[in-house]
Amino acid sequence: MFERFSDEARGVVARAQDEARALGHCWIGAEHLFLGVLDAPAGAGPGELEPLGLTATVWREAVLDVLGPRGRLGPTDTDAEALGTLGIDLHEIRRRAEERFGPGVLDVPPPGRAGRWRR
Image 1 (cartoon, rainbow, N blue to C red):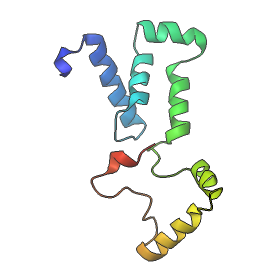
Image 2: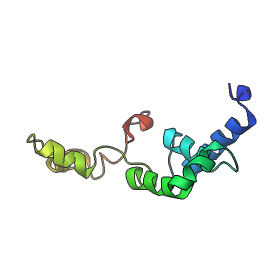
Image 3: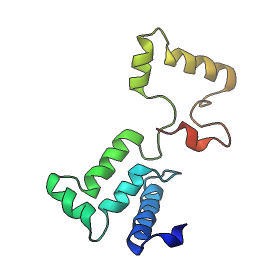
């Protein structure tokens, strides 16, 4: 399928892969593809979006703010607060899981399911 892409599209995908690796992410998502577009040497992406303040640097920082340097797994603090309003205490769930299965048990996805837990 990759051979059907234009040279420009192949460049975007290659840059997206480089960006994902540089950020420590084990997947290539829309966020990385958009970085590939914004990092294009020329074209509509950077030319139209830079005057609006959307550069590759700005987008990369936003991706890191949301996903972190290696991608976030599982619920965030905001999720914990939202679930807390329903009476679900994620900190207590984590404490009990670690008490039963060991420290950090919820920090990594189950084997073979790495991409399904990312945010």
